[in-house]
Length: 239
Length: 305
Image 1 (cartoon, rainbow over the protein chains, first blue to last red):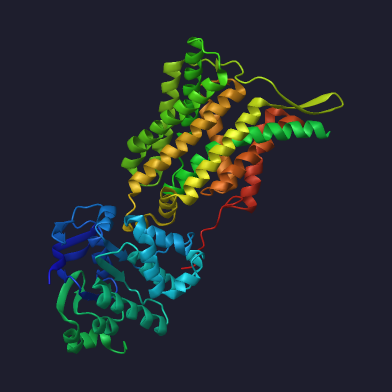
Image 2 (image 1 turned 90 degrees about the horizontal axis):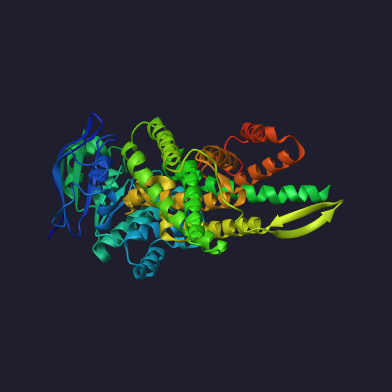
């Protein structure tokens, strides 16, 4: 296995406030890696820092052998890192189709139809909604659209921030199923932030625990699930 | 009297088209970076001056074909104003992005004063005039000795504006550039996450807006025949009012607002006193905003989350 992404000593700030305190993290090709932690621990910031906003103040981010620490956001996206960020951020006044077209910004036009067909396979619901405005979709549909939009760029690395937030259990199951399917069938590498630590650790190969902007624990998914301190902090009543 | 009203309608639509073209530039920039580009009216003025320089050069060379001269003036003006728009954004607004909200606004007022003074010193403070480029017109009807006229120039203005707006609408709704512009307007950070070079798209927005202002400048010049370095201020404020009336941020709203203001001005001048036409325009703006704070086609920003 070769390394897809590796962070070493990454720090990031919002103004004066330090959000990340020396993060070391690696993601191997073909892996699903999850970040768990309480609200405000820095999970979303970590993902956004990989995308270049906020920029890492110190440390380095190496993606497929290339240092991307100082790259602009749109350049990072063009290197096939796709991010479905917190809050879904669907373009509300664009149709589903236009949202998907925005996701396909960085791919050749010839690939668009192929990717689109793949997305309709994965989320048939989007096909029915193709001309509807993004802002009028239900929460679950918006989440599917957010993931599909990220996937339209044929990413090597997909980052998902809380894809299950606010969704009905059945929809969550469907979305997690889709992530697993993409990982197994296409070998897609996934970095996942999830509030539902139990489901996330079951899905992931490895996990990192983030507390107050620093990584306090790491290990295999099943291994972390079995740890008593994880159980106490993140799993009690969580499943 | 129908004939008289019809004449005001024709005049109002012509004037409104020019306002609409300028208003689109205001509303576009507002939509994409949330600032009022107060220098936009002066780009329009520069466009008119480029027109007069080209037309003078043409007649100086003894070329008599005025419509050709006008077309060349239009193209040169569009290109030069595009460069102006690009430079203004680069020099005066981009360094202030992320700063407090008033900073680019003040910078815009500075750019406006700079352009006015630049033209005043380089072209002189006196009014400049050209002979009517395309004289003549149609007689549409006659009633009680009053002749309703639609000049060829008015037709040219209306047709050019419609073509320009058509091209512009196509760019915004159908091309990847237009899609990226709308995406930035709705969520700039997300657009960047998807690979949109937001700085480039913002630059192009200024270029397109300025090109539209250039078209409006040439229209204004050929319709009135007289310009000075200060026309940008008045037309700019009117067009800005049009953008607000139509709902700032809304492109069809800008055109609608422009048309309405043109019509209000024409009818007020025709039936009441011409001295108070601006009072009428701004009163109607105030009344509309009292009942529809987001303008006629503007939207309240309520979205389902």
